[in-house]
Amino acid sequence: MNVLKWIILSLAFSAVWIGCSRTIPIERTDYEMLSEAELNEIIETGLEAWRMPGAIAGGAACVQCHSPDGIDLAKANYSNFTVRRRGAGHAAPGIETLNASKLEDIVNKIRALQVKHGFTAVDPQEWIPFQPGELPIEGKSNQERDAEFGRFLKDMGLILSMDWFNKEADTQQQAERLTEVNLLDLPVGIRLNLWSEDPYYSSSADILGDWLPLNPIRPTGSGQYLFDELQRAYTANTGIKQLSELLSFISEVDFRTPAGTLDFLSYSKYKAQLIAQHSFRYTGKKSEQRSSSIDEILSDLNRAEPEIGNPFWDIGRYFADSPTIDELNLPESHLSRLSGDTFQDLALAWLWLGWMADPGFQFTNCEPEWDCVAILSDQLTEHELHFHRMFMKSKAAVERRYQ
Ligand code: HEC
Image: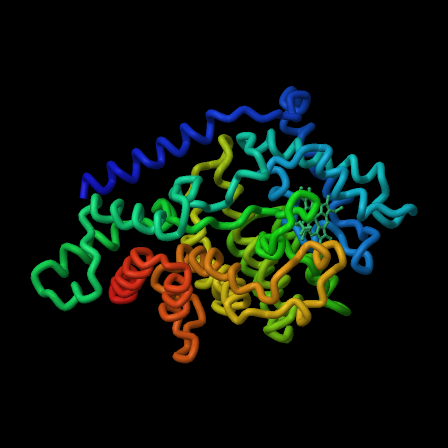
């Protein structure tokens, strides 16, 4: 067991070391001289702009697609230029809507949030949220990465064989080893998604696979008011209770959204994004170092409001059901960049992340016809990731048994 821990620790260490060796520009030096009270004031001012209706998608506000206070943009360290470039498309003349000077309040808020939370500067085009070990296993092809993964498991003392659960002697020890493996730390040959794949830089189908919803979350009627209240309650006190209330509210709206539509994808992404941004709050140097992992957050949330389920998995399932380009009613900015007919290839990374967040499929909808292990297993086979598949089946079986 010690060997296993040592390997995982040393991997985590080397990943941190690699992560720190790159230098990238930091635009927040001036903000570092401000007091906590001054930072909070800038954040409050920026929040007003963040919640103001803008010029696109029928007046959507940043808060209807991004995190409740914009911490996602602070964590991913987008430059001032990028925030202005993206924000400019939302700016409109008028007092009631987001205008160019209000946009500057958002730029200030993002830098103030970075200092307040003590986030390290990452390159948003390289930082992959929740990628175990920070980078996927290296290799020229899936087969190569898979072979490397297999060797790695063997070094950890895990014998991979489809029938080892039937062998009495080894079973207990193997099962213990498998439960010890923390999926959130285990490097894999699957590349997870960037926070944003901006069509400005990117031209593959990945632009649909990133974390941010293309359609805003905008309930109608009094729902709009309640949504706003719940956002504010969470921003004022970022607890699990407030987050679960916000998520469960969205789940109810989501419930009426047909599963194959862009709205369904957007709602699932919005929920996934809310869980992710909650965990970012515990990753900065100034965090309270409370537990922050997505599996614990997901389990706490579902214990509070069981309808929340597993939004990461829902996104994966959406892509696995391979919607076609015609079904999606995509905006022109995205449509012109996309080639290919379906988005099946985007499924695997989200399904794996969904499994990382819920290793025993306790909170995931796996009704018989939606057998979760079979869905992920098929995807892994298709991508020729056979060691990943054997490991997944064994680990999932052990996790379920220990539930
Ligand atoms: C309708 C939903 C929506 C709204 C409203 C919205 N965004 Fe975004 N934002 C996205 C999506 C989706 C992406 C990911 C890239 C893409 O697909 O265009 C994104 C990406 C970004 C990025 C990263 C760009 C990059 O280079 O990767 C920034 C910065 C950003 N948004 C800022 C804002 C600001 C500021 C506002 C409010 C003024 C805002 N967004 C409002 C959906 C939205």
